[in-house]
Image 1 (spheres, rainbow, N blue to C red):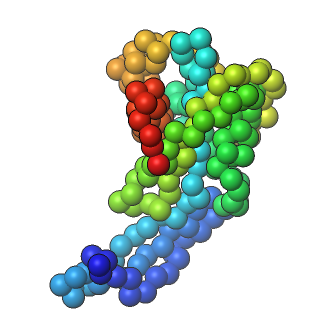
Image 2 (image 1 turned 180 degrees about the vertical axis):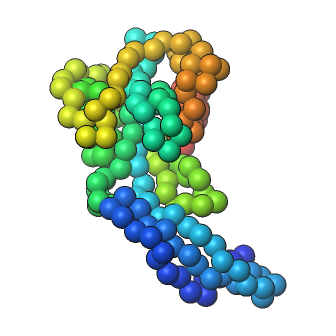
Length: 184
């Protein structure tokens, strides 16, 4: 089947070590033309560190929204490098929380903003946690972490303290996993 939109030309209009923004000239099925802006970023991982009926979460200041919010540990490889999602999940978990996962279970893969970005994310459940030292990046100097019960987690969502779409989507995958659903 022919794609609904065909790329006629593409040019990078901005690039740094984390992302590239490109502008594509496109042609629609009816032959009309237009432009489409796309943000290309490397995939990232979200890790749900779970134990004792709850989760370990991190909180940090998020510059684009101008406030602190809570989320599950997450991140991508620096400089748009690539590697396995499992290795990245273990790295991000240790870097942000200090925990090492004895068991890492893949819950699925999702896209966060498929209308504007090529970026997706892998979701993992981390259990059998062993504490250790964090190794946070300079942008994470203000990061805090805490353990929350599932009820506290839901309360933080209701209060607007957890607004991160990838953390909420990861939680949904966890619930489906616990129901016995097989995810791809």
